[in-house]
Image (cartoon, rainbow, N blue to C red):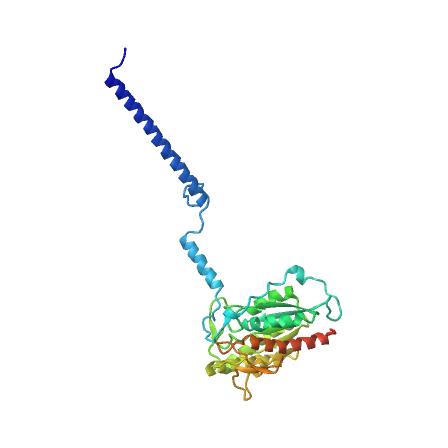
Amino acid sequence: MSMSAPESSTNTLQLLLRQVGVICVLIVVAYSGVKAVAEYFSGDSTNAGSVANPLDATEAEGAAVTASIADETEVPDGADIRQAEEEAPQTDPPVTESEASAPRVDGPPTANNPARVYIVGDSDAGTFGPYLQQLLDGTTVATTQLNYKVSSGLARPDFYNWPDQLAAALPVADPDIIVATFGGNDAQGLSAFEEELRFVIGDPVANEAEWSAEYTKRAGDVMDLLLEGGRTVIWVGIPNDDNPDVTARLAIQDRAAKAAAAARPDVTFIDTWARFSGREGNWAEFVIDPRDGEGKDVRAGDGFHLNVNGAEILALDIAQVVRDDLRARGANI
């Protein structure tokens, strides 16, 4: 039986609507699939079994804070001696086990049997250290390693425990000669050998006798550690400061370090204070450069640290002591 015209039109419209509905469903399914794939590869999916998410906001913030603390170069709490740590170059990478275990040969230092020089300390080591390395490398009979930590010293083992660090580093580096400097951050209260900050002695000026005795002991203990095995130890003192109040504290620290060195004949003390003082022993901004006989500005902007000129002049003084020791060991230089 044939359909009438109205029935045929109605059926055609229903068929068309069903086709449109199917197309809409397909579009929705396709969109959902594309979105799921995008989320999967972007790491934003929160469904079980998806790729692990990166750090959430709280963890990322904590990681950033940790990194900031690790890179901190300001003077630790309790110190107010001015620093120019941002000017200090990076330290050399540590000596590896294979380098440290190179066989030694009895006899004088030579190009094939070089003496090992270990330069260690606070940011002052980072200022004169690179030029000292250049000078000693030029002898061809010595190798050098530079290891320093900005804002560190012997006063605040809670911030950086140098005795522990050296006890671990020296057997690996196995040096013959050690150039050490500590003190630029030490004219402050002395903390206990604990991870948490706890001062055992306060300001050096207000507690001079007690402070001097304890610091002399700390410096002496480190010197004894460095001397083990018959090593040569060269202890580099600190300069004064253009601030009289800071200089008063630094002077107590410098005298204590000198006392520790004087009690140990095998320690050579480099008197940086005298080297960079004026004729009457006061703070000096200009010093004669022995390389050309000209007076040059030797101080950094903070009034304490040495600038490039000063650091190189100090390195020349240290290098001469090291060369003397190399010659005493039989080196032909």
